[in-house]
Length: 460
Image 1 (cartoon, rainbow, N blue to C red):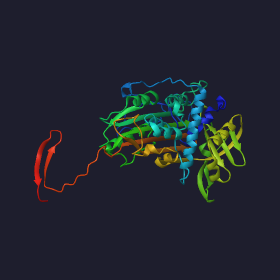
Image 2 (tube, rainbow, N blue to C red):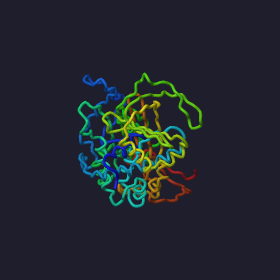
Image 3 (cartoon, rainbow, N blue to C red):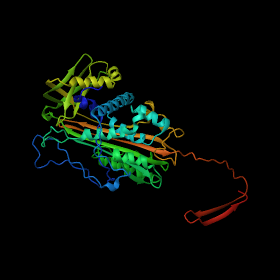
Image 4 (tube, helix red, strand yellow):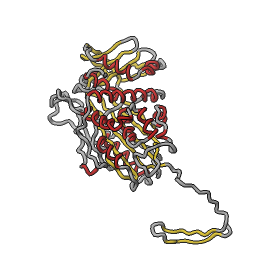
Protein backbone atom coordinates (compact mmCIF):
# COMPACT_ATOMS: atom_id res chain seq x y z
CA UNK A 1 0.00 0.00 0.00
CA UNK A 2 1.06 3.58 -0.32
CA UNK A 3 2.74 5.77 2.24
CA UNK A 4 0.78 7.60 4.89
CA UNK A 5 -1.63 10.38 4.08
CA UNK A 6 0.85 13.11 4.99
CA UNK A 7 2.93 12.31 1.89
CA UNK A 8 0.32 13.44 -0.62
CA UNK A 9 1.90 16.89 -0.97
CA UNK A 10 5.25 15.27 -1.60
CA UNK A 11 3.96 12.90 -4.26
CA UNK A 12 2.23 15.73 -6.08
CA UNK A 13 5.19 18.12 -5.73
CA UNK A 14 6.97 17.07 -8.90
CA UNK A 15 4.26 18.69 -10.95
CA UNK A 16 4.99 22.01 -9.20
CA UNK A 17 8.74 21.61 -9.45
CA UNK A 18 8.69 20.88 -13.18
CA UNK A 19 5.80 22.98 -14.36
CA UNK A 20 2.39 23.81 -13.14
CA UNK A 21 -0.68 21.92 -12.12
CA UNK A 22 -4.30 22.40 -12.22
CA UNK A 23 -7.88 22.12 -11.19
CA UNK A 24 -10.67 21.96 -13.65
CA UNK A 25 -11.92 25.42 -14.55
CA UNK A 26 -14.73 26.24 -16.95
CA UNK A 27 -13.93 26.93 -20.57
CA UNK A 28 -13.40 30.53 -21.61
CA UNK A 29 -14.14 31.99 -25.03
CA UNK A 30 -11.11 33.30 -26.97
CA UNK A 31 -10.25 36.86 -26.05
CA UNK A 32 -10.14 39.53 -28.75
CA UNK A 33 -6.77 40.90 -29.79
CA UNK A 34 -7.26 44.11 -27.83
CA UNK A 35 -8.23 42.39 -24.58
CA UNK A 36 -5.85 43.46 -21.81
CA UNK A 37 -4.20 40.89 -19.61
CA UNK A 38 -5.67 40.46 -16.14
CA UNK A 39 -3.86 42.75 -13.69
CA UNK A 40 -2.61 41.77 -10.25
CA UNK A 41 -4.05 44.54 -8.08
CA UNK A 42 -3.18 44.96 -4.42
CA UNK A 43 -6.45 45.11 -2.53
CA UNK A 44 -7.02 47.93 -0.07
CA UNK A 45 -7.43 45.47 2.80
CA UNK A 46 -4.43 43.35 1.84
CA UNK A 47 -2.11 42.51 4.69
CA UNK A 48 1.31 44.25 4.51
CA UNK A 49 3.17 40.92 4.37
CA UNK A 50 1.17 39.73 1.35
CA UNK A 51 3.76 40.97 -1.11
CA UNK A 52 2.72 38.68 -3.94
CA UNK A 53 -0.98 39.42 -4.50
CA UNK A 54 -3.11 37.01 -6.50
CA UNK A 55 -6.09 38.05 -8.58
CA UNK A 56 -9.42 36.34 -8.26
CA UNK A 57 -10.29 33.55 -10.70
CA UNK A 58 -12.13 35.13 -13.67
CA UNK A 59 -15.88 34.68 -13.78
CA UNK A 60 -16.91 31.56 -15.64
CA UNK A 61 -19.15 31.49 -18.71
CA UNK A 62 -22.62 30.09 -18.56
CA UNK A 63 -23.36 26.41 -19.12
CA UNK A 64 -24.35 26.95 -22.74
CA UNK A 65 -20.65 26.64 -23.60
CA UNK A 66 -20.56 22.99 -22.47
CA UNK A 67 -20.06 20.48 -25.26
CA UNK A 68 -21.53 17.27 -23.88
CA UNK A 69 -24.99 16.32 -22.74
CA UNK A 70 -23.59 15.49 -19.28
CA UNK A 71 -22.94 18.41 -16.94
CA UNK A 72 -19.53 18.91 -15.40
CA UNK A 73 -19.19 16.88 -12.19
CA UNK A 74 -18.23 19.40 -9.51
CA UNK A 75 -18.07 16.88 -6.65
CA UNK A 76 -16.19 13.80 -7.93
CA UNK A 77 -15.83 11.02 -5.37
CA UNK A 78 -12.58 9.08 -4.98
CA UNK A 79 -10.84 7.42 -2.07
CA UNK A 80 -7.59 8.78 -0.64
CA UNK A 81 -5.76 5.59 -1.62
CA UNK A 82 -6.99 5.83 -5.22
CA UNK A 83 -5.86 9.45 -5.43
CA UNK A 84 -2.44 8.52 -4.07
CA UNK A 85 -2.16 5.69 -6.60
CA UNK A 86 -3.15 8.02 -9.42
CA UNK A 87 -0.63 10.64 -8.28
CA UNK A 88 2.13 8.02 -8.26
CA UNK A 89 1.21 6.91 -11.79
CA UNK A 90 1.40 10.50 -12.98
CA UNK A 91 4.75 11.03 -11.27
CA UNK A 92 6.11 7.90 -12.91
CA UNK A 93 5.06 9.28 -16.28
CA UNK A 94 6.63 12.61 -15.34
CA UNK A 95 10.02 11.06 -14.59
CA UNK A 96 9.99 8.86 -17.70
CA UNK A 97 9.23 11.89 -19.86
CA UNK A 98 11.90 13.90 -18.04
CA UNK A 99 14.51 11.34 -19.09
CA UNK A 100 13.52 11.86 -22.73
CA UNK A 101 13.47 15.66 -22.53
CA UNK A 102 16.74 15.78 -20.60
CA UNK A 103 18.57 14.36 -23.62
CA UNK A 104 18.47 17.89 -25.02
CA UNK A 105 21.00 20.45 -23.81
CA UNK A 106 20.09 23.55 -21.85
CA UNK A 107 17.50 24.58 -19.27
CA UNK A 108 14.17 22.81 -19.05
CA UNK A 109 10.68 23.55 -17.84
CA UNK A 110 7.60 21.48 -18.66
CA UNK A 111 4.33 20.49 -17.06
CA UNK A 112 3.84 16.72 -17.00
CA UNK A 113 0.41 17.35 -15.51
CA UNK A 114 -0.71 19.36 -18.52
CA UNK A 115 0.65 16.79 -20.98
CA UNK A 116 -0.83 13.87 -19.03
CA UNK A 117 -4.26 15.49 -18.84
CA UNK A 118 -4.28 16.33 -22.55
CA UNK A 119 -3.47 12.72 -23.40
CA UNK A 120 -6.16 11.48 -21.03
CA UNK A 121 -8.66 13.41 -23.11
CA UNK A 122 -7.26 11.83 -26.29
CA UNK A 123 -7.37 8.45 -24.54
CA UNK A 124 -11.12 8.92 -24.04
CA UNK A 125 -11.54 8.59 -27.80
CA UNK A 126 -8.98 5.87 -28.53
CA UNK A 127 -9.68 2.19 -29.15
CA UNK A 128 -7.93 -1.15 -29.70
CA UNK A 129 -4.10 -1.11 -29.79
CA UNK A 130 -3.99 2.68 -29.95
CA UNK A 131 -5.83 2.79 -26.62
CA UNK A 132 -3.58 0.11 -25.12
CA UNK A 133 -0.41 2.00 -26.04
CA UNK A 134 -1.64 5.26 -24.50
CA UNK A 135 -2.74 3.38 -21.36
CA UNK A 136 0.71 1.84 -20.97
CA UNK A 137 2.48 5.19 -21.41
CA UNK A 138 0.17 6.90 -18.89
CA UNK A 139 0.37 4.00 -16.39
CA UNK A 140 -3.39 3.39 -16.71
CA UNK A 141 -5.06 0.11 -15.88
CA UNK A 142 -7.08 -0.34 -19.06
CA UNK A 143 -9.75 -2.28 -17.12
CA UNK A 144 -10.44 0.88 -15.10
CA UNK A 145 -10.21 3.34 -17.96
CA UNK A 146 -13.60 4.89 -17.23
CA UNK A 147 -12.70 5.56 -13.60
CA UNK A 148 -9.42 7.26 -14.51
CA UNK A 149 -11.31 10.30 -15.81
CA UNK A 150 -13.18 10.59 -12.52
CA UNK A 151 -9.86 10.29 -10.66
CA UNK A 152 -8.39 13.10 -12.75
CA UNK A 153 -11.35 15.30 -11.91
CA UNK A 154 -11.08 14.43 -8.21
CA UNK A 155 -7.35 15.12 -8.19
CA UNK A 156 -7.93 18.50 -9.81
CA UNK A 157 -10.39 19.35 -7.07
CA UNK A 158 -7.95 18.23 -4.37
CA UNK A 159 -5.14 20.34 -5.81
CA UNK A 160 -7.21 23.51 -5.71
CA UNK A 161 -9.24 23.14 -2.55
CA UNK A 162 -8.06 25.49 0.16
CA UNK A 163 -7.06 23.46 3.26
CA UNK A 164 -9.47 23.75 6.16
CA UNK A 165 -6.68 24.77 8.52
CA UNK A 166 -5.92 27.98 6.61
CA UNK A 167 -7.46 31.13 8.00
CA UNK A 168 -9.28 33.68 5.89
CA UNK A 169 -6.28 36.03 5.78
CA UNK A 170 -3.90 33.40 4.42
CA UNK A 171 -2.11 34.30 1.19
CA UNK A 172 -4.17 32.90 -1.71
CA UNK A 173 -2.43 30.53 -4.07
CA UNK A 174 -3.70 30.70 -7.64
CA UNK A 175 -3.88 27.38 -9.40
CA UNK A 176 -5.99 27.19 -12.55
CA UNK A 177 -6.59 24.73 -15.35
CA UNK A 178 -8.74 24.98 -18.43
CA UNK A 179 -9.53 22.43 -21.13
CA UNK A 180 -11.08 22.94 -24.53
CA UNK A 181 -11.93 20.98 -27.65
CA UNK A 182 -11.63 22.74 -31.00
CA UNK A 183 -13.52 20.84 -33.70
CA UNK A 184 -13.94 21.31 -37.45
CA UNK A 185 -17.45 22.62 -38.06
CA UNK A 186 -19.98 20.32 -39.72
CA UNK A 187 -18.33 17.04 -38.73
CA UNK A 188 -19.81 14.40 -36.45
CA UNK A 189 -18.15 13.66 -33.09
CA UNK A 190 -19.33 10.73 -30.95
CA UNK A 191 -21.54 11.91 -28.10
CA UNK A 192 -19.93 9.54 -25.56
CA UNK A 193 -16.55 11.20 -26.19
CA UNK A 194 -18.01 14.69 -25.75
CA UNK A 195 -19.80 13.60 -22.57
CA UNK A 196 -16.61 12.23 -21.02
CA UNK A 197 -14.76 15.48 -21.67
CA UNK A 198 -17.57 17.75 -20.46
CA UNK A 199 -18.31 15.68 -17.34
CA UNK A 200 -14.73 15.21 -16.14
CA UNK A 201 -12.67 17.99 -17.74
CA UNK A 202 -15.24 20.77 -18.23
CA UNK A 203 -13.91 20.98 -21.79
CA UNK A 204 -15.89 23.44 -23.83
CA UNK A 205 -16.54 22.71 -27.50
CA UNK A 206 -15.36 25.37 -29.96
CA UNK A 207 -16.40 25.02 -33.60
CA UNK A 208 -13.85 26.37 -36.08
CA UNK A 209 -13.06 26.12 -39.78
CA UNK A 210 -9.60 24.63 -40.15
CA UNK A 211 -9.63 25.42 -43.86
CA UNK A 212 -9.07 28.96 -42.57
CA UNK A 213 -6.12 27.65 -40.60
CA UNK A 214 -4.65 31.00 -39.57
CA UNK A 215 -7.95 32.16 -38.05
CA UNK A 216 -8.24 28.86 -36.14
CA UNK A 217 -4.63 29.06 -34.96
CA UNK A 218 -5.05 32.58 -33.64
CA UNK A 219 -8.28 31.69 -31.82
CA UNK A 220 -6.64 28.74 -30.03
CA UNK A 221 -3.52 30.76 -29.17
CA UNK A 222 -5.61 33.62 -27.78
CA UNK A 223 -7.54 31.16 -25.63
CA UNK A 224 -4.30 29.70 -24.26
CA UNK A 225 -2.88 33.16 -23.54
CA UNK A 226 -6.06 34.16 -21.72
CA UNK A 227 -5.84 31.09 -19.45
CA UNK A 228 -2.16 31.63 -18.58
CA UNK A 229 -2.11 35.36 -17.88
CA UNK A 230 -0.36 35.88 -21.24
CA UNK A 231 2.63 33.79 -20.15
CA UNK A 232 2.09 31.22 -22.92
CA UNK A 233 1.77 32.88 -26.30
CA UNK A 234 1.80 31.43 -29.81
CA UNK A 235 1.58 27.82 -28.64
CA UNK A 236 0.63 26.69 -32.14
CA UNK A 237 3.09 27.98 -34.76
CA UNK A 238 2.19 29.10 -38.25
CA UNK A 239 1.68 26.34 -40.78
CA UNK A 240 0.90 23.53 -38.34
CA UNK A 241 -2.87 23.50 -38.86
CA UNK A 242 -4.37 22.86 -42.29
CA UNK A 243 -7.56 21.82 -44.07
CA UNK A 244 -7.06 18.21 -42.94
CA UNK A 245 -7.04 19.15 -39.23
CA UNK A 246 -10.20 17.91 -37.59
CA UNK A 247 -9.74 18.73 -33.92
CA UNK A 248 -7.30 20.20 -31.41
CA UNK A 249 -7.45 19.24 -27.74
CA UNK A 250 -5.98 22.00 -25.57
CA UNK A 251 -5.04 22.19 -21.91
CA UNK A 252 -3.71 25.26 -20.10
CA UNK A 253 -2.45 25.49 -16.51
CA UNK A 254 -1.36 28.46 -14.41
CA UNK A 255 0.26 28.72 -10.98
CA UNK A 256 1.22 31.68 -8.83
CA UNK A 257 2.20 31.58 -5.18
CA UNK A 258 4.28 33.49 -2.66
CA UNK A 259 7.07 32.02 -0.54
CA UNK A 260 6.25 31.29 3.07
CA UNK A 261 9.66 32.79 3.80
CA UNK A 262 10.25 35.42 1.12
CA UNK A 263 13.74 36.50 0.19
CA UNK A 264 14.85 40.05 0.96
CA UNK A 265 15.80 41.70 -2.37
CA UNK A 266 18.48 43.68 -0.51
CA UNK A 267 20.32 40.39 0.06
CA UNK A 268 20.38 39.48 -3.63
CA UNK A 269 23.80 39.94 -5.18
CA UNK A 270 25.87 38.79 -8.14
CA UNK A 271 27.64 35.52 -7.38
CA UNK A 272 29.28 32.77 -9.49
CA UNK A 273 27.34 29.76 -10.73
CA UNK A 274 29.45 26.80 -11.86
CA UNK A 275 28.42 25.22 -15.15
CA UNK A 276 28.74 21.55 -16.14
CA UNK A 277 31.87 22.24 -18.17
CA UNK A 278 33.59 23.81 -15.16
CA UNK A 279 33.25 27.41 -16.29
CA UNK A 280 31.60 30.14 -14.21
CA UNK A 281 28.60 32.36 -14.89
CA UNK A 282 27.50 35.33 -12.82
CA UNK A 283 23.94 35.02 -11.49
CA UNK A 284 21.66 36.99 -9.19
CA UNK A 285 21.87 34.89 -6.03
CA UNK A 286 19.04 35.28 -3.51
CA UNK A 287 19.91 34.71 0.15
CA UNK A 288 17.65 33.75 3.04
CA UNK A 289 17.79 32.17 6.50
CA UNK A 290 14.72 30.45 7.87
CA UNK A 291 13.51 27.44 9.82
CA UNK A 292 12.64 24.60 7.45
CA UNK A 293 13.73 21.27 5.97
CA UNK A 294 16.86 20.32 4.01
CA UNK A 295 18.84 17.18 3.15
CA UNK A 296 22.58 16.68 2.72
CA UNK A 297 24.03 13.38 1.50
CA UNK A 298 27.07 12.15 -0.38
CA UNK A 299 25.24 12.45 -3.69
CA UNK A 300 23.12 15.57 -3.36
CA UNK A 301 21.90 18.50 -1.33
CA UNK A 302 18.19 19.35 -1.28
CA UNK A 303 15.97 21.99 0.24
CA UNK A 304 12.22 22.37 0.62
CA UNK A 305 10.69 25.83 0.12
CA UNK A 306 7.08 26.20 1.26
CA UNK A 307 4.60 28.53 -0.36
CA UNK A 308 2.29 30.61 1.81
CA UNK A 309 -0.52 28.43 3.06
CA UNK A 310 1.79 25.45 3.57
CA UNK A 311 -0.04 23.09 1.21
CA UNK A 312 2.44 23.50 -1.67
CA UNK A 313 6.20 23.62 -1.82
CA UNK A 314 9.13 23.56 -4.20
CA UNK A 315 11.96 21.06 -3.81
CA UNK A 316 15.38 22.00 -5.14
CA UNK A 317 17.76 19.06 -5.58
CA UNK A 318 21.44 19.69 -6.39
CA UNK A 319 23.66 16.68 -7.21
CA UNK A 320 27.12 17.29 -5.71
CA UNK A 321 28.96 15.19 -8.31
CA UNK A 322 28.16 13.47 -11.62
CA UNK A 323 25.06 15.49 -12.47
CA UNK A 324 24.31 13.40 -15.56
CA UNK A 325 24.52 10.11 -13.70
CA UNK A 326 22.27 11.36 -10.90
CA UNK A 327 19.77 12.68 -13.41
CA UNK A 328 19.63 9.35 -15.22
CA UNK A 329 19.04 7.49 -11.95
CA UNK A 330 16.26 9.83 -10.81
CA UNK A 331 13.06 7.83 -11.13
CA UNK A 332 9.72 7.94 -9.33
CA UNK A 333 10.95 5.85 -6.40
CA UNK A 334 14.09 7.94 -5.92
CA UNK A 335 12.14 11.20 -5.95
CA UNK A 336 9.51 9.75 -3.63
CA UNK A 337 12.20 8.86 -1.11
CA UNK A 338 13.75 12.33 -1.21
CA UNK A 339 10.42 14.05 -0.69
CA UNK A 340 9.48 11.66 2.11
CA UNK A 341 12.73 12.41 3.94
CA UNK A 342 11.74 16.08 4.23
CA UNK A 343 8.94 15.08 6.60
CA UNK A 344 9.86 15.37 10.25
CA UNK A 345 13.01 17.43 9.58
CA UNK A 346 13.07 20.87 11.14
CA UNK A 347 16.10 23.11 11.40
CA UNK A 348 17.88 26.28 10.38
CA UNK A 349 18.28 26.67 6.63
CA UNK A 350 20.73 29.22 5.24
CA UNK A 351 19.92 29.21 1.55
CA UNK A 352 21.39 30.70 -1.57
CA UNK A 353 19.14 30.25 -4.62
CA UNK A 354 19.61 31.86 -8.04
CA UNK A 355 16.77 33.85 -9.51
CA UNK A 356 15.73 32.24 -12.75
CA UNK A 357 13.23 32.60 -15.55
CA UNK A 358 12.89 29.84 -18.16
CA UNK A 359 10.66 29.17 -21.14
CA UNK A 360 10.70 25.88 -23.05
CA UNK A 361 8.89 24.83 -26.21
CA UNK A 362 8.54 21.27 -27.48
CA UNK A 363 6.84 19.24 -30.15
CA UNK A 364 6.59 16.04 -28.13
CA UNK A 365 5.81 13.58 -30.91
CA UNK A 366 9.18 11.82 -30.79
CA UNK A 367 9.21 11.67 -26.97
CA UNK A 368 5.71 10.22 -26.77
CA UNK A 369 6.58 7.63 -29.42
CA UNK A 370 9.65 6.72 -27.36
CA UNK A 371 7.33 6.14 -24.37
CA UNK A 372 5.38 3.60 -26.42
CA UNK A 373 2.61 5.60 -28.10
CA UNK A 374 3.21 4.55 -31.70
CA UNK A 375 -0.09 3.82 -33.43
CA UNK A 376 -1.71 7.12 -32.41
CA UNK A 377 0.74 8.92 -34.74
CA UNK A 378 0.34 6.44 -37.60
CA UNK A 379 -2.21 7.56 -40.20
CA UNK A 380 -2.77 3.97 -41.31
CA UNK A 381 -2.95 2.32 -37.86
CA UNK A 382 -4.42 4.87 -35.41
CA UNK A 383 -7.82 3.97 -33.97
CA UNK A 384 -9.77 6.95 -32.67
CA UNK A 385 -13.21 5.58 -33.44
CA UNK A 386 -14.20 6.68 -29.94
CA UNK A 387 -13.93 10.27 -31.20
CA UNK A 388 -15.61 9.62 -34.55
CA UNK A 389 -16.32 6.50 -36.56
CA UNK A 390 -17.05 8.58 -39.67
CA UNK A 391 -13.41 9.32 -40.53
CA UNK A 392 -9.87 8.06 -39.95
CA UNK A 393 -8.06 10.20 -37.38
CA UNK A 394 -4.49 10.28 -36.12
CA UNK A 395 -2.28 12.59 -34.02
CA UNK A 396 0.05 14.81 -36.03
CA UNK A 397 1.58 17.04 -33.32
CA UNK A 398 1.82 17.36 -29.54
CA UNK A 399 2.76 20.95 -28.78
CA UNK A 400 3.88 21.98 -25.31
CA UNK A 401 5.15 25.27 -23.98
CA UNK A 402 6.01 26.07 -20.36
CA UNK A 403 7.23 29.09 -18.40
CA UNK A 404 8.55 29.65 -14.87
CA UNK A 405 9.75 32.73 -13.01
CA UNK A 406 11.35 32.26 -9.57
CA UNK A 407 12.23 35.43 -7.69
CA UNK A 408 12.40 36.88 -4.18
CA UNK A 409 8.62 36.99 -3.75
CA UNK A 410 7.57 33.59 -5.06
CA UNK A 411 6.91 31.62 -8.20
CA UNK A 412 4.82 32.16 -11.32
CA UNK A 413 4.52 29.26 -13.75
CA UNK A 414 2.33 28.37 -16.69
CA UNK A 415 2.09 25.67 -19.32
CA UNK A 416 -0.10 24.63 -22.20
CA UNK A 417 -0.47 21.50 -24.30
CA UNK A 418 -2.22 21.16 -27.65
CA UNK A 419 -2.75 17.85 -29.44
CA UNK A 420 -3.57 18.25 -33.13
CA UNK A 421 -5.60 15.49 -34.76
CA UNK A 422 -6.00 15.19 -38.53
CA UNK A 423 -7.89 12.97 -40.90
CA UNK A 424 -5.85 10.93 -43.34
CA UNK A 425 -5.62 12.39 -46.81
CA UNK A 426 -5.80 8.88 -48.32
CA UNK A 427 -9.32 8.38 -49.79
CA UNK A 428 -11.25 5.17 -49.34
CA UNK A 429 -11.33 4.58 -53.12
CA UNK A 430 -8.71 5.20 -55.79
CA UNK A 431 -8.68 5.60 -59.55
CA UNK A 432 -6.05 5.60 -62.28
CA UNK A 433 -7.10 7.92 -65.10
CA UNK A 434 -5.17 9.20 -68.10
CA UNK A 435 -6.81 11.82 -70.31
CA UNK A 436 -5.21 10.77 -73.59
CA UNK A 437 -8.11 11.31 -76.05
CA UNK A 438 -10.24 14.32 -77.04
CA UNK A 439 -12.33 15.63 -74.12
CA UNK A 440 -14.99 18.13 -73.15
CA UNK A 441 -14.67 20.46 -70.20
CA UNK A 442 -16.94 22.80 -68.24
CA UNK A 443 -16.35 25.51 -65.67
CA UNK A 444 -19.27 25.92 -63.28
CA UNK A 445 -20.41 27.41 -59.98
CA UNK A 446 -20.61 24.57 -57.48
CA UNK A 447 -23.55 25.63 -55.30
CA UNK A 448 -25.86 25.89 -58.31
CA UNK A 449 -23.98 23.79 -60.89
CA UNK A 450 -24.43 26.66 -63.34
CA UNK A 451 -21.93 26.33 -66.15
CA UNK A 452 -20.02 29.53 -66.82
CA UNK A 453 -17.54 28.13 -69.35
CA UNK A 454 -17.66 25.04 -71.51
CA UNK A 455 -15.51 23.65 -74.27
CA UNK A 456 -13.64 20.75 -75.72
CA UNK A 457 -10.11 19.73 -76.59
CA UNK A 458 -9.60 17.56 -79.61
CA UNK A 459 -5.98 18.50 -80.35
CA UNK A 460 -4.06 19.83 -77.33
